[in-house]
Length: 284
Image 1 (spheres, helix red, strand yellow):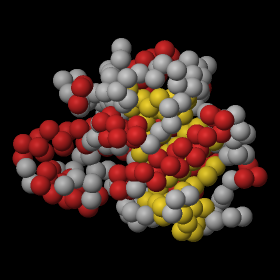
Image 2 (cartoon, helix red, strand yellow):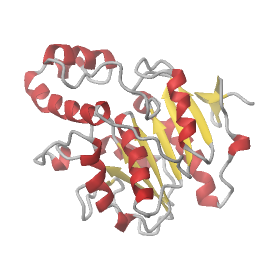
Image 3 (cartoon, rainbow, N blue to C red):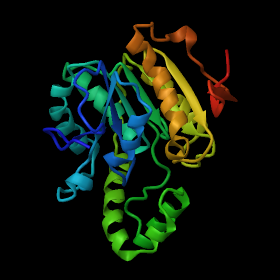
C-alpha cells in the first residue's frame, strides 16, 4: 500500500490508478486502521481508486499522538484533502468512521470545497443520536467486557496484556471521537446517502438508523446484511458488490436515483445477481 505524500491517506492498490475516473475514500472503525480496506481492491472496478483514511496512532502512523475529538480529526484531514479532490469521489465509513466522513462532508461544504457525490454510512446510528453509555472512560476490566460483547476483537487478544496495551488506548481515543461528538443541526447534504447495517447488530437501533434520511436532500437507500456489527468483514464481497452498484451511475453517467426511487421502510431477504444473500429494501 502506498501512503503517498500525506500520512492521512493510504492508496490500497499496488500502484496508483492515475487514470481512475472516481475515488472512494474509506474511513475505518474505532481501533482499526486503513489496512482493513486493502482486500477491497479485488472487488472494485479499474475506474475506481480506493483511498483509505488513516487516523494517527496506528500502523504507519503509530508514533503519532492519538486524537480524541471530531474537530481534531476533521480539521487536519480537510486541510490534507484538496489535492485528491480533482476527481469525483464518494465516502464510505463504518461505525465511528461513518460519523467522521459525514462530518467531513459538512466541513468540505462549509469551506466551499468539492463534496462527495455519494455518502455510504455503515453500522452507525444517525448523527444526532447520543450513546446510551459513555464507554471510553470505563475502567479496563469493564471496557474489555464491552469489547468482548462487540464480537470484533479475538478473545486471544483480549487476554494478552501486551496486545491490550497497544490496542486499548487506540479504541478509547476513537471511541471518544464518537462519544464526545457534538452534532449541530445544519442543512441536509446534497449527495445521496446509502446506509448499510448488520441485521443482528446490537449496537444500532432500527429507528435511529432510519433517521439518516433527514441528512440528505437528495435520495436515501438502506441495505441490511446478515451478521452483527462487523458484517463488513463477514460479508465483504457482498458489501463490495453493493458499493459497486451504487457507484455504477457515476461511472456510466446514468442518473443517480432520487426521491421517487428511495426506500423508506421495511426489508426483505434477497439475492445479488449471482445468488449471494443480503437484505434488500422492500419495494414501496
